[in-house]
Image (cartoon, rainbow, N blue to C red; front, side):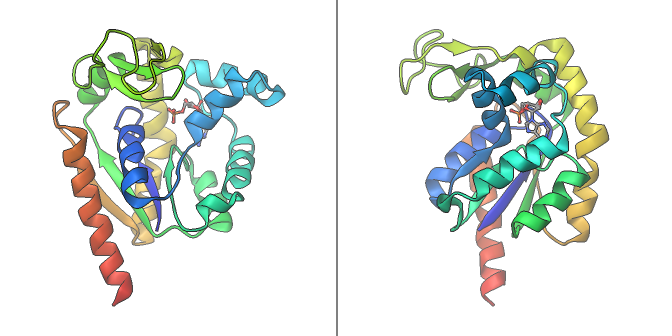
Length: 219
Ligand code: AMP
């Protein structure tokens, strides 16, 4: 199954996708991770897009679409995928239509106050990318990843001023995709009003939706 996770920054897309990828056995493709990898590796592309990412701005559609098309050309995404962070504009959604079939779009509904609390407390492992939260998903040892022992850091774009800019950008550029996918009859909503709801509870809700869509496509 080919699934898009839609939702504002800090809605939990990466956290849920990292669990769904294990359950479903399909790759988790995060364009944000791809952007950070290019930047960390200091490639020519990484140098060109660092400014956008640090300020929480969108990387131009053509660059992101090319990056994604290259990734989807790899054999592991043939049996299915979970897309996290793409599409973020109508142009990207149209490009995605040309590159890949999409079976389901999960829209994560999260109030702004939950997002701001979550992002300003988010920590990421520098080595393996595991996501933690200082309030809700604490590592066993301060600033050390439970999984690989890597150092935890706060993303440059998770600072309060940038968070608000990213939310505004989401409302303007990405929210229209909700209507876009509703019209295509692909959209299903999942609500998450409370920061303290464990990720497993939301993942279970998403799995129920996936199951019902699979049943319908079989009949
Ligand atoms: P994320 O981890 O999904 O929040 O992405 C981090 C940053 O990478 C964003 O703030 C953008 O600068 C860039 N980025 C990731 N995905 C896209 C996309 N689909 N379109 C444009 N920029 C993106």
